[in-house]
Length: 119
Figure 1 (tube, one colour):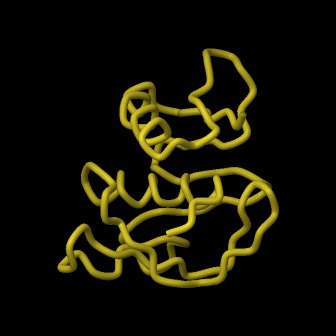
Figure 2 (cartoon, one colour):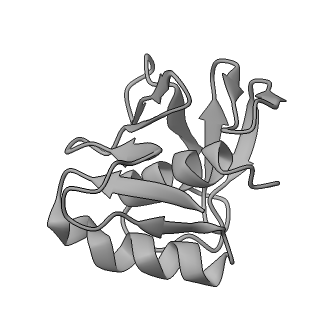
């Protein structure tokens, strides 16, 4: 079971819902519990010795590329690794089926990619 830590308690409802709906073998950390993945206050995701920055700026690891397509698309701009060590090359990532504003969708996609989500 992967434990997900959160900088903002307000992220708990949508992260729990995301993990449950996607049937991920992960859960949100209880207070003081060590975590494997951490979502910081800016929506970046840390885990497996890497930081996946998420945002609309071109320097972010995961950034929106097309919001006109149904659900939107993001671009993974650099190689990253899942927690189990699989390499994910740069590519387009669908944001379809992810809820919330675009920043939340990007964070959700980064979290799922670290967990091994096949998009």
